[in-house]
Every structure is written in structure tokens, then in C-alpha cells.
Image 1: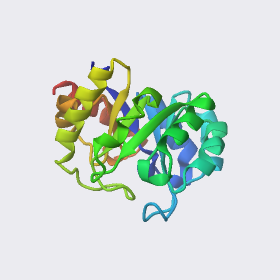
Image 2: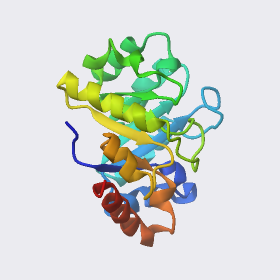
Image 3: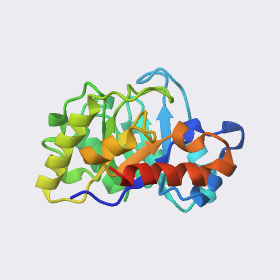
Image 4: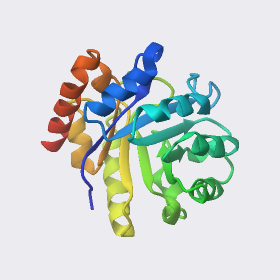
Length: 224
């Protein structure tokens, strides 16, 4: 069963020169989660932030920190991000040899566990780990950079995952990450998603626009 729509601004699109202020501003503007993209320049072709930045940002927002590890291997860094203040830690199936073990590690640290599926990653990879998952992220772009265009092929994948989540009887967030804006949000919500990662759509226009951006995005999604 689909849950309420939540907006998770991706700080990849924020002003890195004043990241703490950006996180405060977007939290006060009505965001539900703060989405933190961690990239290693190896698993994906970009390099972003580490646990120290999460530690620095934690005092700036009471919201759920949704930390997306686009790194390989991910396992050696799970504990550090948990200690840094992550609330949800999401890994990719390709970022380590044992997905089940990675999820167990996240849960053992008292955090919610997520799995992110790239455009070419089939949903069957989740078949034997559903009991350890709190969130599934459908990548509607290839991971590594912000500002990419939405891949329409993500929509049937979202719908298929919605059916599997509902069949599981578990309360699992279904998140979409990549190219989410006022045009694509209604499509992904109609397909079954309930968490929208939005970078450019949230952070465009500066802090004075954040509340309006989030309100507009939420309104577009609700109209699905």
C-alpha cells in the first residue's frame, strides 16, 4: 500500500560553499528527508562527500538523513556513516559481494536499510532479501551526476516494485532518484512511488524559492 508522499531534496544540487545553511533552509521549507549522495569516483564517475560532512550537517536538521552510498566496496564504510548520523543507509547490489550481509550490518547498527537499483539492475535481485529492506530506490538516471534527464523505462520498474512491496505486506518506502521534477513527479507517483528525490527541482532559485519549489513539487505529485 502506497504511503504518503515524501520529498527528499538531494544536497548534490545545493551550494556546497554553505551546505549547513542550505540543509537548514530546505528543512525549514518543508522537506521530509535530506538525501545525501555519497560518490567515490570508482563505482560512479564522480567524487562527493564522506562521513565527516554528514557529522557536520547533522546539527543543522532534525529530518531523516537518507544516505545513498554509491561506493564500492560499501561495507567498510557502513559503520562510519551510521555513527555520523545517517538514519537510512542505502547500498547498491553491485557494491559488494554479499547484499544480505550488507543489509544485516546496516540493521545491526540500528539504521533503516535501503537498496538502490540502477536502470539496468533487475528487481529480481531483491527476491531473497525483502525481510531486511526498509527502502527501495529506483534510479531513473544512471548514477553519478545530478541534473540528468529522467529515463522513462523506470516507470514499469516502479510499478512492478509497487506490486512486490504490496505483496510482501511490509511497510517499505519506494523512492525514485533522478530527473524528478514537476513533470515527472506525477508519473512516478502514479506508478507507485512514495518518496521523491529532487535536487535541481528543489534547490533552483535559492533559499527564498525552496518552500515554493517543495510545495509545487508536492502539489504536482499529489495530482497524479
